Length: 479
Image 1 (cartoon, rainbow, N blue to C red):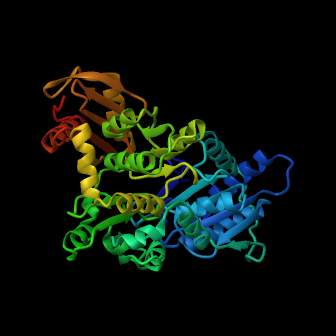
Image 2: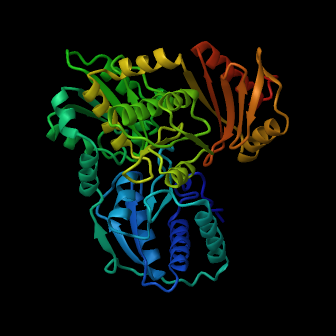
């Protein structure tokens, strides 16, 4: 029996092993029951169901929708695949009680899963997903006599795409981007963002090239996570795209809520640089003010930019549900996490890769500067900030957790040649050295992966810190 548990943003597992039609129905029924309980005596709550482009995603979504309808909630199924932020926006636009989305986000092609978005358009709070897990366990203990509908006549339908694209055009000056002459490359990684942003940008007059914009459930062997190791095709396209006009690239993950920008020289901006640049644009160019929210594994360039702008900074555990909660609590101007997810005030408290890409293009159009020039400008002001991440696959979830708990119980006084000035155990273990460089070890929420992060002034120092972290994880005497 599969133990269905929700991690930092949903439940995920291997298709046909963990994610089966039976388990999808269980999760959907658990969600429907908790939503109904929260609604109390009100009329039947309205839930949306969306999906991405993975193998069986549409069929899983239909099964989930029917299972929830059989639990007595009103259900509308997306007319086609769509980015997660498009479904999240639809929750707010249609005043629904929430949305179940069949997606495994950035996980490898053999994965699927379920995300749930609350009525405010962001990831469900931990208390909600815990209640769902408890409800699933009760359902698993019941006799298998539940009868599901055999047709979808009772399901509604909704368009998740065009209203979302219209909303993005209200939030960003797309016409100015079109007039700027910026050439834009989009790597949609065979995911749910394909064919969408490219159309709106071309309509505005931009020259746009889209990579991997077709349905391929195996992703042609591409891991749909927008990190440098997976972005060779996009980097080559941007770097060797001849012409005098400015250029930039953007990669999106499998459900298009995360992104990675690529500058004119083919350099992939780190999430830390991206969040700092986004903050800089919102405050200096668009004249907005407010609190800044970041996850604990985001680096110090964001801190430096917030301090220079005189803005308060709030740090959260990893997982965008924590960032979203803080953004709502403090009415934050922007929030971001290390995995490439960012949100801004005035939209939904949720990652939206397309919106962030448009805002960065708007920044280029307003300043007349390339992404690379904008980053160099920040570094001239705040100093160099280099960053790296290593994902280490271990033998089991237990081994992964043992490494983190052991380091938390006995953190070292020094890392390599420098003393540790601060230990942050909010989420995993972050060791901040005397010069503010740091290394962090943290367990992935969905796989037997140990994530090792590091930030320092030079790439050589980053590599050394990552190697140290790997040695600790593999018990190679790194400490």
